[in-house]
Length: 307
Image: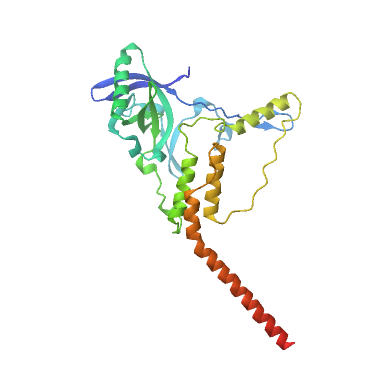
């Protein structure tokens, strides 16, 4: 069972739900230490006071706000704890909204909210069932680690999940990142939609959705521990020539996706649309070829007369 990160209560209206907050996710990444390569000694980060040029203990370290280049304002943990913050021990719900009304870029990591004892069982279940029936999520404010935060509460199976959220002013505008205007035909959009449909799945499960890099690192470490050669890495597939035609790339992608799912890889309706629209382009190309041949013949005739 994961350890409790924070204890408090959910508060909405006059209802209070005592809860414990536990992590809803796990990090399975392989972690490394910094070492001295010559003798494998650990290399650690030492905390040095830049004025006294000496290592200081954790008891000597506090918080300070850089007011100017030469002035730092000290702030103690006790002063921060005494700030009158109503969300210090409560997750206060301020509104209920449809989930699709919240931009996913605002949503962060998730935590399970565990009811704190039998007294919390009924109000916890009440809130969970009300969220389910309303098809809404709750937007709340809470305080962790010396700052007030924005959060989102939703239901996952029989548990209530708290997601951290960004404040509106923490989201940067993408206006300066927008690409220049580009002409995209309806048939290209149709083909892209067909590709989306061919890659659509009911749930995010499957052998392809696993951390193969971490698996490879673990295999490497195990091989080195046993003093043997690590597993051979398969040669990457030879890179194909770049497909310049966007429509051709889309059609090939749709065919491959359907083939991988055991479906008919033939793209029927889209191919017909494409053929009708591309026919004039082929005629133009043949005209250009004829014109080039005629020009070449004229040039040959001029060379013969000059000879």
